[in-house]
Length: 98
Length: 142
Image 1 (cartoon, rainbow over the protein chains, first blue to last red):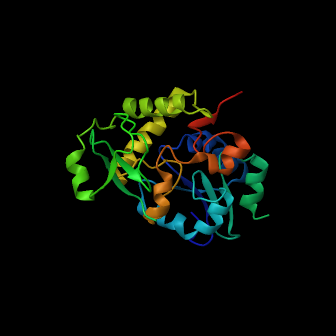
Image 2 (image 1 turned 90 degrees about the vertical axis):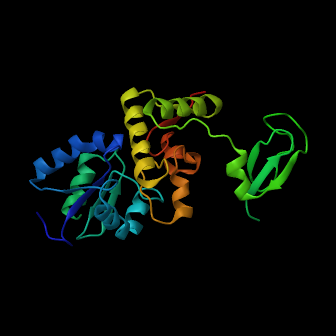
């Protein structure tokens, strides 16, 4: 597991259908790049929600103005992705810090 | 200006807003609303049925979509049910039926915008993809 500040984070919600839909793509990303994202549920874990709010500016920008899930945050680059229509190639660029 | 409560002096209908309705939507009386003290509101209103099961939440969404000219409810019943479960979880844990695909900020004024159905027509998702953020409501085809 990566250290804080060096993590690739997936913020997700237990009752969010899009989070469920994107899970296979996340798993494929992890498998093909041999990496592990931190999967942080945000509606039932206040610490995870707080962390997401800390990165709120970047994430809400990626989400079109407000915080939403599924959202992805690269702690090293400060880059965020949001939504469930993220192509695998874009995911890989985000994960590799490009 | 601040929103306040208004009471129909004919049928005790309660309205919350900047101005009273010209016509009472319940009894049809005209110019019948007077400003009402918030403490009176709870006594004047009769308790209504709680919307506390997935079936009831889905029924509310169906009624909303049926009366709305621009949106329809998503067709995937499993997704709709999952979202209904989510808003009920949020009702239990956070006191309001927040969208389970958004996140509260702790700022009540902002968070009130996340109650489902939210004002999704202002979202980028609605204009670009034709659906609300969580995909529950979609644009009606012409």
